[in-house]
Image (cartoon, rainbow, N blue to C red):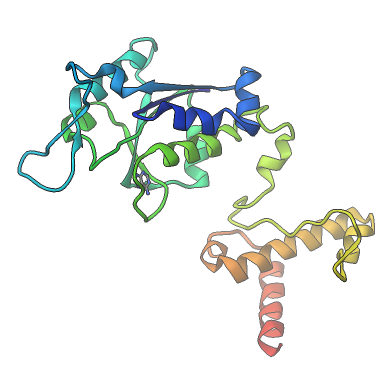
Length: 247
Ligand code: ADE
């Protein structure tokens, strides 16, 4: 999987993505992360890439041509026209489902805006997807691009050494992950739930599933509506709700 990030701040994205798990996956050749500096495609002697918006208004806009040339520098090397994602609060909100879908792509271009945005004409010409990472406004698209690269990369086979863990975690079947414990068995007077020490795998699985359901009910009830609970689990949850109310 190859990520190409078009940005005015290449060192920001490269520093952020060349460490830890993603950095290791890059070194192992499972991924590549290339940052293309849009400023290298400035077409005037001041190397400026921004200008005032027609019609007036606050701030500066990134001009169409440098963005287009930066895009072309990547696209011309590729056989097929890649998906180009523009990070913007106006886009579809990023989700695990979207990460799973994008992890199927071989090449992805991520376009990071700055200042007050980018000249609309180049967006019309090159962008295939508009993506937001949430309903708040950041100063640029770099952090959102890094968020996307991280979430997508960990789904690429081999990036997490343990492939099972990407499958059985938060958001699998719209349930949050169950609580986990490591040594010691008792810490600050708190004991590890006994079932986890029992070695009884079926009971452990049942407990974990129930904890996932309970946790999702308590913390993200909106997700629970989309999960596929069995009739038995629904009844169990109703009982738990009654118990919680009487506490
Ligand atoms: N650029 C600025 N804010 C953003 C957001 N919330 N998501 C994606 N890109 C952005």
